[in-house]
Length: 369
Image 1 (tube, rainbow, N blue to C red):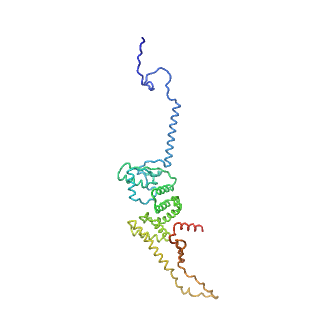
Image 2 (cartoon, helix red, strand yellow):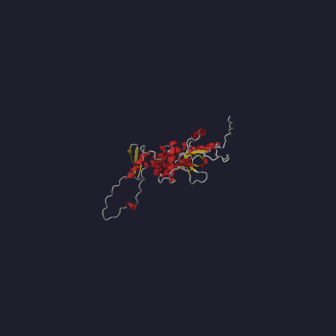
């Protein structure tokens, strides 16, 4: 009977390639990965990583990536804000929404290359959301309100940044004519646009022409009264256009109105509106009294003027002078009354038909003369 051979346990290091394994008899080489395959694998991984990095950088450059930034890193004064005030009820509602559901819509910021200190990004749009988060963090000290989700964009120019801010607010919360005019004035003052016309066209290029003309009228109001008005966004369109028209006709109107606003020290919007309406009514009444009084009498001639000049020839008969015409009024068009005062060389248009469109038509007519 043949003798059975005892089997030994398998060696755990036989396939590991460890140096601690016992020396084996010479034989065929183990089948590992070929060197060329390893090189190809490393090259493919490197290329994929580079491609991913490129995609991420392009997304970041185009403002397609949402980043989480500290509240303290956002400079709210990077652009002059177009929204002058925010209703407290609206702000409290936004705060409650952020408290319950968090921030869903990111703000837009631009990275400041000249940043010094912690203000590394300038705010373009999203002022209400940023303000609400700041207030929540101050009230609760909750770390979840210490950061803000933001799209880091790279506008090509300052004008593009202003347009982005205006368009975002036009979509979300309709701006008043005064706020629109004010941002045009501020952008012009900072040299973003060379003149008022280009500022209005650049900022409100998608706005109808008639509406843009009204904003231009409110620019006059902003330039004259921005420092003394407390509730400018409450000024109705019709009242604002009337004030602008008076300002353009006579600068004295604006100086007196500013003095009345300062003296009145209005503490409520209704008080300020009453001052504006009252000043226009008083001004128009005084203007009508001046027009109805007629021209001033001509001074009496002096004796030297009344004495005829000596002449050897007979003097021609004096020409009959045309009687003075102090004021002529006529209906120039439906809803438009035209008044011409010869002595003051003044033409005045009044009535419901006097609109910004008529003003623009007159400007075009004068430009073609």
